[in-house]
Image 1 (cartoon, rainbow, N blue to C red):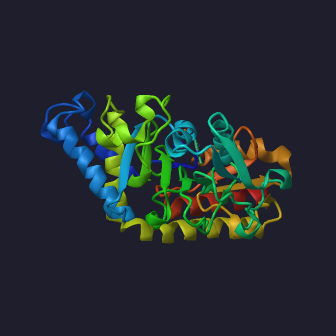
Image 2 (image 1 turned 120 degrees about the vertical axis):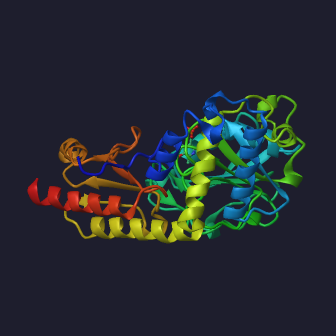
Image 3 (image 1 turned 90 degrees about the vertical axis):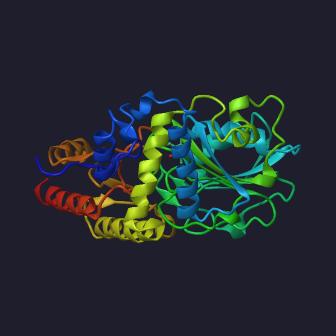
Length: 359
Ligand code: PMP
């Protein structure tokens, strides 16, 4: 069979080099005679891996010294609770920008802990654009402002950084972190689940400015307390060690590719090619405002929706997998994270063109 390309939104494709290395050293990690899965998380070898992750992340994303890097257990959904629990700091209000399914979920969860002010929303207008900041109703007394940098399901992405003055800016970057350079000091906190650009599910990365720590709500579970996790180097309990290991391979892979600048150039080229093709086609369509189209998750529909099943089946037969849209919105979606090579997008375009000709 010719190449297989995995367009899944997450868990998502891993680079072949990462799979090959993980496979090769699975049973004998660093000549220990053991698998990395069999090694204690407090062993010198594993602690060295943890330190390597910290320094590679700091280098790749240029993370300043006054930010802590936490590797927390489980998915990004946990952060929907941990963020308010840790960042309210005696305040009772927080600002949320509602731009899609994920920001909506985050704000619903936050309502358990505080008064949520929705500063802007596209829910009533079909989720096709991101409201301009000039129209946001920011609350200067908010403990923080939360937004979702890339809406994985709705196919919307911020191409600009919100400016919220001195109020800490919090961003869910689950489906965009490491896809481009980032000005970390603009943020109070960034979080990202593992299963897109960071390797595997089971861990969520949190990058948080140190002065925001140490004031969690008393009912915060120990594992969700950022201060406790920072003091324990994210090793308070047994972490998902294999996910940490895969993250370490992913970081090295990004480095060998040339870092996040090269990733950004590649990701831009891939997405532009696909959107250009969709916009010029009579069969495929994408109704997201061009200003806010996601580089990571390209959603599209067929003008003849009854052909979508046939499209997915034919795509699978060509080795193009995971192209279905999220179950909540349907349609089609091609996720183009760092690990998707340009050749994968070319193969998809060739298939889409053939399908349109032959349908
Ligand atoms: N936020 C965003 C932007 C996501 O894409 C996802 C998952 N796709 C989540 C949060 C939730 O992640 P998890 O399922 O790992 O909890």
